[in-house]
Image (tube, rainbow, N blue to C red; front, top):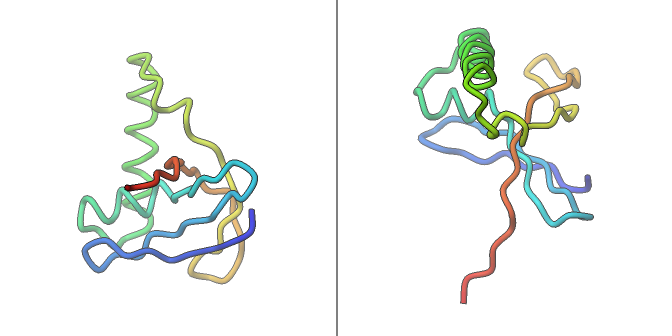
Length: 93
């Protein structure tokens, strides 16, 4: 991983990290959940994702298998394992 980025969606910060080897951006799932739900409470976002992930696994949804954990810096300045999803870099012509 070489680049760390803070993206914004509807004024919500979404932590991202660039995987140079695989040419992918990895995005914090909890930050994406917060941005989509317009929720800034970290604990509520974490609980929402935990519930949703459990539900998706029970239904056999393959989306959950596409998540990994990477250490991302949190608001307290420490780095914690965080669920991340990737997006393949696409070229527009």
